Length: 142
Length: 145
Image (tube, rainbow over all chains, first blue to last red; front, side):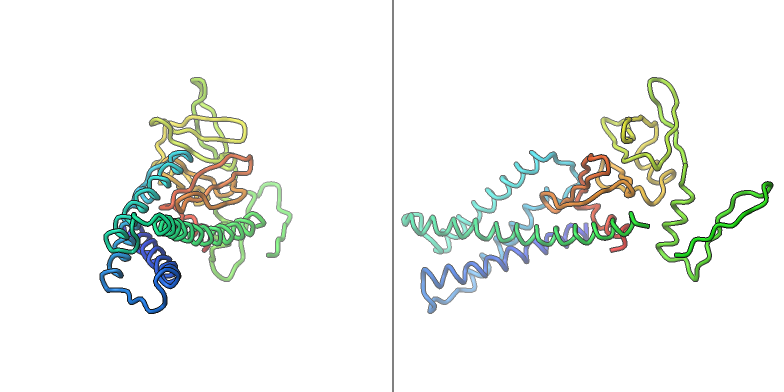
């Protein structure tokens, strides 16, 4: 349980960090450098981070998913995060569905955050794999 | 590590003596391997009881309440449950890597990341085994990370 909570905290941190990073660029581009972010917006970003972490739970359960099931799970996970972020974004006025360019840009931002988080996770896992392979090699040489 | 092989009298039993300052992980692993060298386990195959050396087994897998051992060219059934194998029979080289599989660490060729924080182990004969995220810390520990 402790391990699961630790991973969920990591997911929360990565998502929130990535949103802040991309949001800074997005806000500067669409609203200029003078735009002030309300504390409710920060809470909304943390809510998205929280939902991302909680929805990641099926990946952490002791279930042997097949490759196809894993891909489906990833797609469903993305769709949930996407829907939550779109609803939160629209209700907070981060974009409006009336403006197609705005909506497409916001969707691009969501995809960007998702891809960044996935890449960061993959880099971390690749690094772990590299270290483990090194240890395996040492072990096999003994 | 220096290896010295000494002659012995014909009536004497073969003996391995390890001279070390302290029992570190490397020495423990070595002892474990010597102890388990040629250790056999019984299996059922076509209503017969057959024996296989543990060192030949790539992994154990539980499928529909039955436990099978996979070697390079054979699949053997055992009456033991995975937890029994884990607790009472298998040396440290065998590690639980997901709910249904115990893998022989000595048969792992390489590891690579898979979806969702899981890893994929490619065994020396090309078989692939998924390592669940929950078992990754134990694997790292077993490898000394």
